Image (cartoon, rainbow, N blue to C red; front, side, top):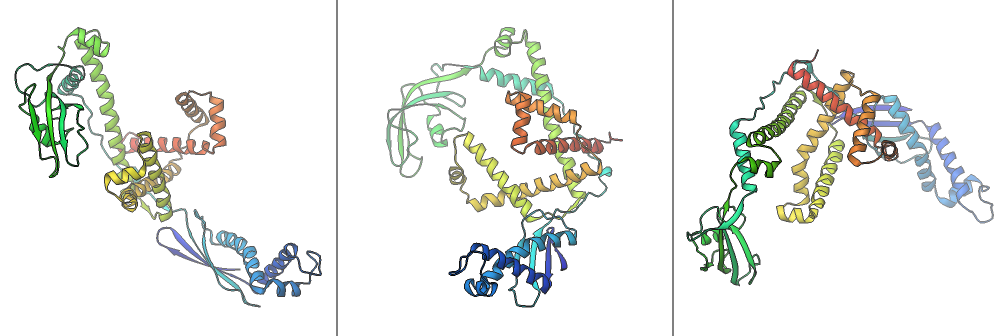
Length: 419
């Protein structure tokens, strides 16, 4: 068997394979034997008809088609071994027509496991950014906490202004608008931007009992509101009692300390994520990866599935999302493709890094991760392990843990902390 190998961009290879005439004839003979066992010819028991008569009965094309189905899979597998390549997709195969006494030729095109060259990753240096919480940050968080515990109290005699709440009842409505239904009440916070700007502007300066009409919602709509009530937010005083009620703290100082500690954790987590992303960027910039399009397409479908599941949890469908964002399905795919490409490149680079650095989780670490999964699912460890095995997800868990450890080591190198 002759095999010619031609490499193409995007980690794709073309194998041109030629089987000698004697192998082709063996395939034809095997095809006739198989057809003889399946086809009944009048006057003969199944499997007993002469081959010449069988070929005349079913037609030479059917025999050759059967022979191709027998010969090509094994020939392709042998060609892959002979070429020393590692396919990651099913091949696209084009077979030339069989001719009596001549070789059988076919061309197989397939994507390969891409070769990854990391470059000098040990020279990567990315200093972390400071992650500090200031007194002003704590003050702002406490002020936000006070706003969340604020009460609405009567506004009094003054007209409504930004930050006030106006309770209105739709007295009249005309045109195509459907947001304000006649007879319904709406509580509108001026300046919040939740309702149309024209509505908030029309309600600025109103007093209780007043009627006001909005005529600029769109050219064909008019809404008249009856102002029922006016209220303002009254924030609770910052006292030890408020600290106890709002956050179960014994004092304002303890409230500040608790919030600072919580915010510090959040800031550090965001800083670590941002730093890790910069380290990965540096790794990808120094790496050479010829990514197959099939891998990106596969990851793209994962992203679409993740988005669909996220929308479903919020009670939305993909179709409704596309309508709301005014996108076509193809525009969504084009928008997500760069993220899919980066994710694939990152996984390939981190996997190569883990091999270069011999990063491999121990069995104890794997068992601990299984326990963590069981704890999150509130299930027994044994049941979770069985579920992982049955669903084929055990290897996925180990791969994820290996990548996590590899990223931690890469970050340590970028910080200058690794040996």
